[in-house]
Image 1: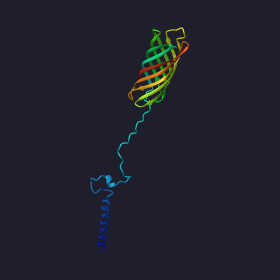
Image 2: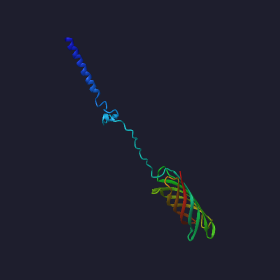
Image 3: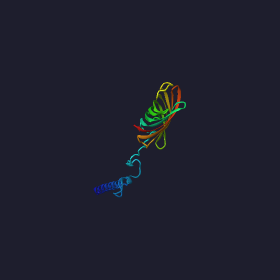
Length: 220
């Protein structure tokens, strides 16, 4: 009888342990009632257990400078000069202009060199010639619609033909003026219009001669 009671107690102890194990395995934290339910739903919305997002990071916008990243500008075109030779004598001259500008990257100020050659008539003789070589600073401003406004002040030398009895054919010269470069945005090609005043001292007198030009500009 004593052994029978002992065996019965052991059987009851094992039965209680098995029931506790079954209840622990059916906990909602470890299994879902529906096999198709995602794991994240069973785990809840705890931030410690959230899965990493696969969404790509947003790209930062690209910031462009005020000016295009072209350091050099080369130009060539037509120029018209109304040259005041001496008081009461003028020469209407047509010619060409060739120029080059260097801007340090993104800067509003650069260095410019320019050459002009023009031909015309004076005193009934179609023999007047003018050569002008100058250099100096150029300043620019970015305007709407890809327009670049600029101004310059150049100094150099001028040579004029024909020879006269009033003095040397070569003298100091300066050019002051400005203009605009117009072209498609991000394009290497632009069209330039400009107006200047040319100051010279030839034949023992001063000349203040207006000039207008139109050119094609290549940027690189």
